[in-house]
Every structure is written in C-alpha cells, then in structure tokens.
Length: 165
Image (cartoon, rainbow, N blue to C red; front, side, top):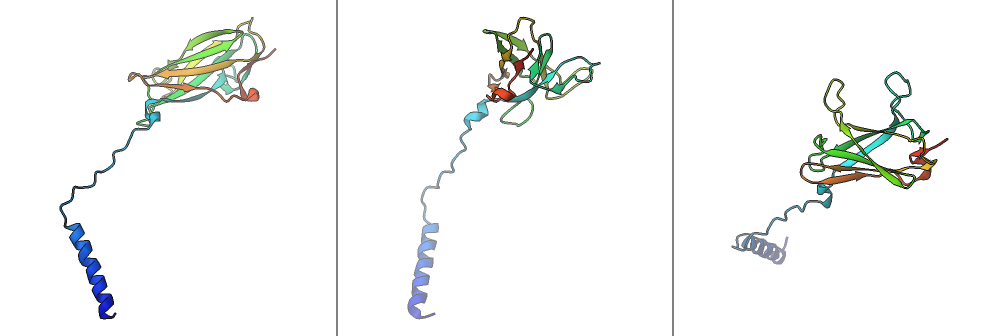
C-alpha cells in the first residue's frame, strides 16, 4: 500500500474513533406498538350434528339440517397476547333465520366429568316453522378485560349453515 492510501485509511479510522468517542445523546430505542389485534379475541370453530350420545352420527361435522335436528356449535377463544385459551371468556351464538335472531349461550367444556379444554358448545334445535335456506350466524366472545372477538363463517352459500327439507 502506498503512503497516500495508508494516510487516507488512517484518517478514516481516526474520524471513526473520534465519532465513537463523542458525547452525543444516545439514540432512542424504538418501542413496540401493540397491534390492534392485541385487543381482539381469536374465535374459531365449527358446526356439528348434536344427535345424542347413542347416535353414531353425533358430533359429525355438517352444515345441512332438517327441522327438529340439533345444530351443535363448537368454538374456541384464544387470548391474542398469550396465545392460550381464554377459558373465562363468554361466548354467544347469534342465529338469524326467518327474519329473526335467536341468541344461543355457549358453555365452557374445559371442566367437569368429561372435560374438553378450550371448547365451548352451544345447541340450537331447528324449529319446525324454520324456512328452508341459508341460516346466518355469528359467534361473539367477550373476556374479563372487555376484549371482544367474533367468528363469522365463510360467505359461500355451499358451505353455509342451511335448513333443508
């Protein structure tokens, strides 16, 4: 390396050392901003046929029901911060059919004689006067901190809950 290049490299090194040793204010470390989703419970689940313990078709997933058949809603609510089941949350299914809405409370099944941790269930029996066609439903959840969450099934006719003859 020639003297001129060596001088240039030394000058750069000295400038860098001087900058590192200066008494400038420290650069503030950015803080994480909580995601808006940190305030929303994560709610998901499915619908199954609630036929009773002796029927081999009980708890089989389905979306088509006849009058008198029981729709079983099985849901889970997750705390968005911890990623764990929020077993103290309250869940309600809002079933809309024939121009009216019925609220179906859900029960937490994580305790008792036959526990299913992380599962809430609700049962709606299709009324005899229910019109045939798509039945809309939404599941709402609220926890003790006041956070809410909602589950809405896909808006695809072929996969929606329906009353059939």
